[in-house]
Image 1: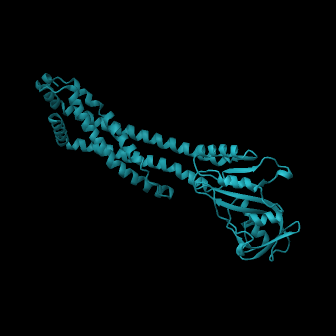
Image 2: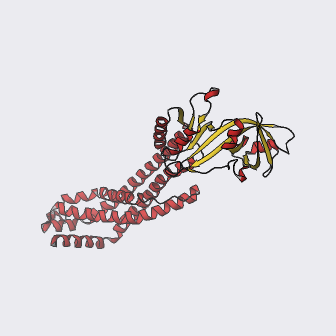
Image 3: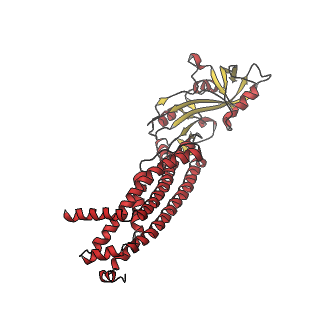
Amino acid sequence: MPDRKMFWRIIRRLFAAQRGRLLIILLALSAGAALTAALLNIQVDAKSRLTKEFRAFGTNVIVAPRQSDAESATLDENIAREVREFPAPPHSAANSNLYLVADVFSPASPSVVKAVIAGKRTEFQDGTMTSIVRSVPSASEEESQRCIAGSKAAEQLHAKTGVEITVRNSGREETCRVEVAPPRGDEGDSQVVMSLEAAQRLAALPGRVSLVQLSVAGTPREIGDYIAALAQKIPSADVHGLRQFTGAEAKIYDRISGLLTATVSLVLVLTGLCVMAAMTNVAMERRNDVGLMKAIGGATRRVLRLFLAETALLGLAGGIIGSAAGILLSVWLGKTVFGVAAQPRLIVYPVSVALTILVAVISAYPLRRLANISPASVFRGEA
């Protein structure tokens, strides 16, 4: 206990003796910790941010018939039910779709227009796909007479929101009140979207769907595992992913992650060099102190332990201050550069503090020169 009290008393004296130089070291460590925490927080946030942004593009997994002949060009709706009930990552969604080409009549159009009719039912899930939300009401409901026309389809039909159109196919007819969708830049611009039930009646295919489109959240590896498990669950269907989404997501994140990791490493190296230069001067100025400690019986290992403890405390203080500032900096950088504030990630704080302490301890290498100092040479003024 007396040794421990003396140890911490000497540590306090060391901090009080050279406040100027130690303040410079603390500033260097804090700056390094701030940049490290900011970059690490952006790196961790980029992973979830990219996953979320890529899911906004929509479908990344397809469940389709295995053959393309007329008899098996559709799937039984029971398969869609199996997809819904299959455990999936949170915030995923599935669309049951039935496609056909039909004649569309509009009061404002001088002629009949051939259009792609997409019967759709969107089913969101939170854990499993069981909560069904229909993007277009079914024809059995009072407000079911509603359909969504893509921008190109609406232009061909000369249709505006609120106009009633009639869809006919092989003597079967459905009437709906159109709602014009804004341009999306994909095939949906040329389609007329109806409820799945209405499309099934038009096509005379009750209980059948053309395919099931899924938007599955998660990393590329998680999505790949989900596809493999779902393919085993439904061997009668062709389950595959859209590689241009999952592959692009993985490639972009790998590049961003590699760049940020290299930058963090460079920041830590530069911080270490700055601290090492300051520690060299500290070691030169403390020769007399070390000589006196050795002269009164202090072991070299204990002397070095004092200075390493001082350095570690500097690293801890710099890490705590700098990491907090760095996380706030990452939030500001995300909002300024990317337009979306980065979410503070709790795991970043202890990691950046630990890295700062490690850099501080490694940068204290010049203090090892104090181990070779002879008390006699110090008292004679030769050291």
